[in-house]
Image (cartoon, rainbow, N blue to C red):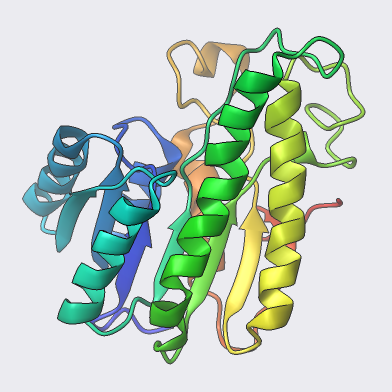
Length: 243
């Protein structure tokens, strides 16, 4: 996929140490025009300024993915300016509390987590699909997690790992949404990607988490798939990950 004038939108890219910002950086280094969003305007603008200072074409916009009006405003702006987007990275999500279990979870908190991790991503996909379909090489990547998989031996659904129940369940549902979107949009490449256990938090490296750049690379791989690339799949590091 050519980077020439390619427009890449990344949600949840406001944290300097996060996957979303690193994906934005790696795509920007390959020549793509970066549109990054965050819930706070100052975070979006600060991250965009960092990329711009590094010679990357970037802009930041405030966008809470649970607010359809805010999402619609960004979509309308990009439609007016570019008439399309070429890459959509659905990265924004909510982790929840590590002590949350399915048996005892506060369902009010669970619903709030689902609003971001599942329904927010779903809403963003719906709102931006017309712009993706206007691209000659539209790519949609849902950033998922092995926590939503039966196959992940360390953090998967069937393991005793202390992952928030609602997070894993929402990510499993996000994987299912990915399959449906791929089937309904055969002109696009739509995939879910687990970046793996990455050091996006203080002390992560000491716990064995890998560098953020390594986790982000798998997301970038899916964003840059050729037209004959897979769609409707779940991947980590460019390799299929079991459901």
